[in-house]
Length: 156
Figure 1 (cartoon, rainbow, N blue to C red):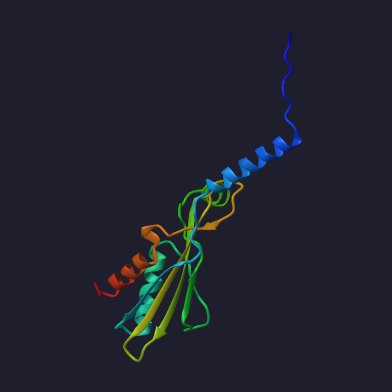
Figure 2 (cartoon, one colour):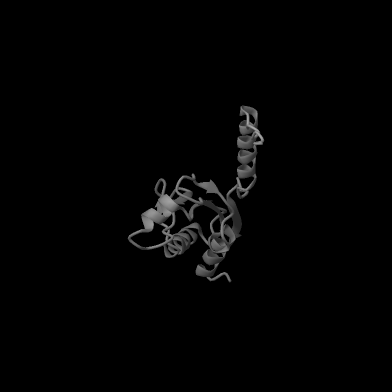
């Protein structure tokens, strides 16, 4: 005698699909919405701080662009993470991490400058993923960038 196999109805398939979607959503990494930011009041004129910031960012692999001439903001493109012929594929297709920096310089009198550094770090896990904000690694963090600028100015 053969026993009949139980059939799986449409409601069972729907619940299986919903369960898989929930499990996939729970397994994703948490992301940080705010950019990493550091701020300092430096006892150095703005022109010297600007030169030091540009030097440090260029040494770190960023292409620095200035808004209007002498304006308070400096921005960068995404940092060159890897220098190879397949760099475009690694960054755009398979994903790793990428970062860019926004800097604001505000003169505080003749001999002081308020420096604000903001690092935006994004990452993705695969070909079909989109870039998501993540906490910046220590080497690219805003605090580390500020430390490098202070070191270039001889304040450390």
